[in-house]
Image 1 (spheres, rainbow, N blue to C red):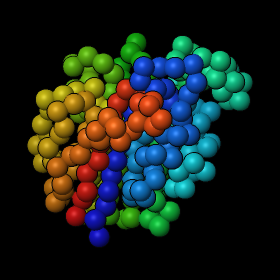
Image 2 (tube, rainbow, N blue to C red):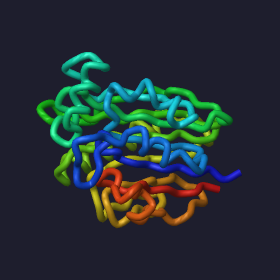
Image 3 (cartoon, one colour):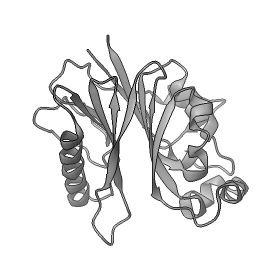
Image 4 (cartoon, one colour):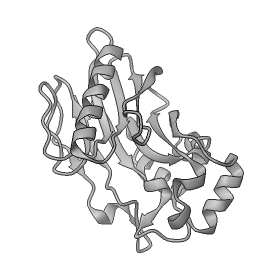
Length: 229
């Protein structure tokens, strides 16, 4: 049975260009509307993590990468004053893996991949359907840092996988023009879903109009997806 894996950096719920209001719920509902099997999210406001299962109708496994400076509901109210300005300054951020409720999902842990002195970045690992190990990451800017963080993510994911599981690396790599031995082809951008040693479709990058609602373009990144057979 094919597995659809999708990734999206949701830009803290911001539009492109950023506006005063946020669109977090609209983004989650949009990216899950056609019932994908797995969705990897980056730059999720911490206050929104508790709402992911409600808005997506999927299982949500999340990890906080930057703690909020103020409590969740207070942070949410502050951000609503001007979503584009406050962004993650008060609310913190996290990564999340959404998994269809019909599939088994197991938290396999997470690890910091960034060096001291850099913005804290984390890779999280989730076992899916007792067949896949999905690793969700968001690397720092700068090719040298991003490459190192990708290699750490790969090592963590492969160590967290079990015999005969297919490893999937997904997220905002902040790297283009990459090639990992044993993994499927990347996109031409910086967001990727790479699959180890399996039959997989070419990556599909959503066209802008697919993430546009009422004339508003959601996020400064486009979702990327692949189908694994």
